[in-house]
Every structure is written in structure tokens, then in C-alpha cells.
Length: 423
Length: 180
Image 1 (tube, rainbow over the protein chains, first blue to last red):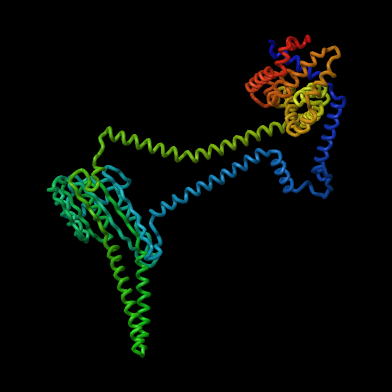
Image 2: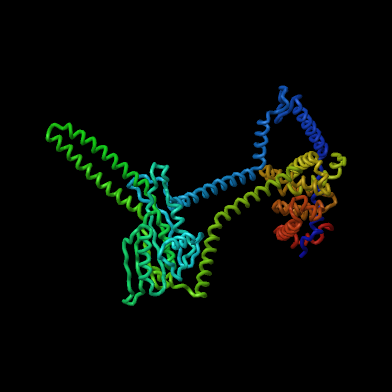
């Protein structure tokens, strides 16, 4: 069966095409239209010269102005552009919507992040005594983990403490947790409320010492407290006779100003396996208590004045009852103030001392993985971290690709339109 | 280079008009489309300095004008165009010596051509009627030569699979249309 080859198609189509008779007035009609178009364009050009012009098919009277106002021209240009590039306009609208949505999403995702930072950041204004204390601090430094900073504070403090020779095993990790906490601690400066900031500072330290050195280390910690104008709040040692490892826990209370020195001195006594420092700004709470006490004392003074003027026994008893109540509240608040003052005057440093390589409360962490296991662990950790990173960038990347696709599509459509328009 | 519209019309009007007829399927739309095309081409004749050849450029303008007409005039086109009109035109406009069989073959092929989508119909008309090369067709429709080649191939396949053309082939009418 014959097929539709090129020759057959060419023959048939030429046959069919040539059968269409040409319109007799075709070329002359085109010439007429071209001449009219030329005349109209020439007239329009003359109109812009100030002689009057045709605008949208309507003759505009000459007003002496050189041409249509720029605003109207711009509006007309925009309108015609939008009309002739509907797809491009729609693409641009979609792009703008996407950008707005993306911006909103970015802003929305940024808010919780700021909230997270806020919870860890120092609080600069505590509202009242009923508000929860906001704390901040650093809680890490496992053995072998390096942190930015230096050990200069620790070694300096040890050297300045007479009678405390640093043991041979002392190799404090490169940490500045104590120093950093000291720097970050003041949430309210003295200028803010007219008095020095009240910082409640605590710390926890796990030390690993040489075999048989637990008791000696506890003694040195006792001496360290004394050297820093502090004292030992509590001390507890386990000899390890029941099969366990010898260990001890000592709680030191030292003046806030000596906290860093005490911490550095304690770090120099053994190998630090864990260090936690925490500082809480309680200035607002302190000031609030003080102001409450001041107000209550003022009320008490008022009642005392009333008492002097009371004439009947009933009045005296009623005023006395109020005075008793006020006195009770004042004493209660003064007690709280005293406790708070004590807490902010002295910092608490709890030190766990252990003989073994493992820290007392972190036996699992002490089981240091072997080389192969560590490599496997690192590999898994890296895989998880990589996956997290990919997922994290997937959203923005998808958004960027979408924007790019829309822009390319719009550009392509615009280019085609432009090419057709130019012909 | 000095251009004269009269020269353009003399050289290109007939081919442009008949090409538009084959693309659009009726004379009225084709006449308007070609008028628009020449008007537009004359307006932008300065662009001719940047094109290598005037023929594909002119066909490109005509094709674009046909596209515009198809977009604007679809309801009218459906009303005005029809296989009957084309077949009648074939019969009436053919050489008086041509046979009825020849008119039938041409009418069937033309009807099948009108059933092709525009994207396939235009390359076929430009290739087999206007005798443009694939490269010039690519310039005329603003696509790559590879795209033109694949569209021509697809158009031929669809035409060959058209039931009316298959029937013609079965009747032996496709053996030699020129001789017929």
C-alpha cells in the first residue's frame, strides 16, 4: 500500500494551495492600509511635537503642551503591558505571592528561635517576686571535649593558693565556663535600679583523681574553701569498702567574688569530667522584696500614729491586730530577703571526687568507645547530621527552585512575546 | 538597503496568502491574516538588517499572524471554515482538466491536514507547500530544527493513520496523485 511520502504530500499540498485564487484587491488593500498606517503614525509624531495629536483614535485639541502627561503615558503603558502580557503578569503575581509567603514563613520560623534564645539569655527585668527565676548557665564539658577559652584562670588561682599543689594528673579541660558565667551573669546593672546586681551563682564539678587520692583531695577542697573566705557546707565520702569505687562529694560555699578562683582551684585538683555553672539574676526579686518591706513598714508607721490617737479600747485592739499582721508580714519578707541575700552573697560549688576514670554519676559516658566503635559512632552521627542538614535546606531550596522556575517561565513567555511583537 | 512594499507583495503575497489558507482553512481569515502580517512586517522592516534571509522572516510574520487569528477567531473560524468549503473550492478552482478523483484525494488530504493540531499543521504547510527547509521552518516558528523534524515526523504519522487517507490508500487513489 502506498504511503504518504514527502513527494506525495508536496504534490498534493501544492495542488491544493495553488487552487486558492488570490483575492483581486488583496495587494492594493494592503498598500492602502500601510499608507493609512504611515499617515496615522506621522500624525501622531507631529502631535507629540505640540501641533495636536491623535490619541486612541480621538483627535486631541492642542493645548500648547508638548505631549500627554507623563503619568497618563506611564499608566497607559502599564495597562497595555498588562493587557498584552497576561501570562507574564500572572506569573509575576504568583512570584510576588510566593515571595510574600516565603517571607512570612521565614519570619514565622524565626520567632520560636528568638524565643528559644530568649529563654537562655540573661533576663534583664524580673517582673515581681511571683515570677519564676530565670537562669542561665553552661552545662557541659565532658572529658576530652575542648571548648573555646583558656585555662589561665584555673592555673593562676591554683598558684595563688598557698599549700595547694596541683597534682600530677591535673589536666583541666580547656574551658572557661566559670569565667564565661561570670561575664554573662549580671542581668541588671547597678545603674538600672540604683543598687548592685544580685547574682545567685552555683556550680557543679566532677573530678577524677589518682587512685587513693580521694581523701587528700577532699582535704584540699576544705582548704580551698578557707583560702577563698568560704566554708564547707557539706562533705560526704565513700571508702568503697562495699565493692564500689571510693568517691566523695563536697559542697563549698564561697563569696560570689571568689567563685571563679575557687572553681579554678578545684579544677586544678584533678581531671575535670563534668563542669556545670549556673548564674541567676535575682536583683529584681531582691528589690521587690525590699520595696514590699518598705511599704509595709510605712503602713506600720501609720498604724502606730493611729494607735496614739485611739481613745477606746476597741479601737486600740483593732489597730493592734493590724499592727500584728503587718509585723508578721514584714518579718516573713525580711526572712526571704535574708535568705536571698545569703544566696547571692555566697556561691555554692558542689564537687564530686572519684578515683576511677568514670565520673561518679556518668558511668555510661565513662565507657569510652574503642577506636572502631568510636569510628562507627562518629559515622552514624555524621550520617544523622547530614540528613538533618539536607532536610533543613530542603525547604528553602525548594522555595528558591520554585521562584526560579516561575521567573524562567515568565522570562521565556516574555521573550517569545517580545519576539513575536517585534515581527 | 531600500525596501519597497510593492516588491514584497509581488514576490510574497501569493505564497503567503495560500500558506495562510492552508493553515487557517478559509480565505477570509487568511486574507485578514496576510494583511496584518504585511502591515506588521512593513512597520518593523528595520529589523530586516538583523535577519539572514527575508523569506523565512516573512513567513514567520505570516505564521504569527495566523496564530493570532486562530486565537481570536476560533468561533468564527469554526463557523466559516469547513471541509465542504474546501472540497468545493478544490473542485471549482482546479484545473478544468483535472479529474474528480484528483479533487477527492486533495480534498481528503486537506481535510486531514485541518484535523492536525496547529503546531503540526504549520510545519507541514511550510515544508511541503512553501518549500522551506527545516532550518528556515525553525526560524519561522521560533523552534529548534530538531523540534521541527520531530513535528514533521509526527504530522506524517498522523496523516498516514488518518482513516480517510487509509481508505484512499485502500482504493488505490494514493498510487500516483499527480497522474490521477
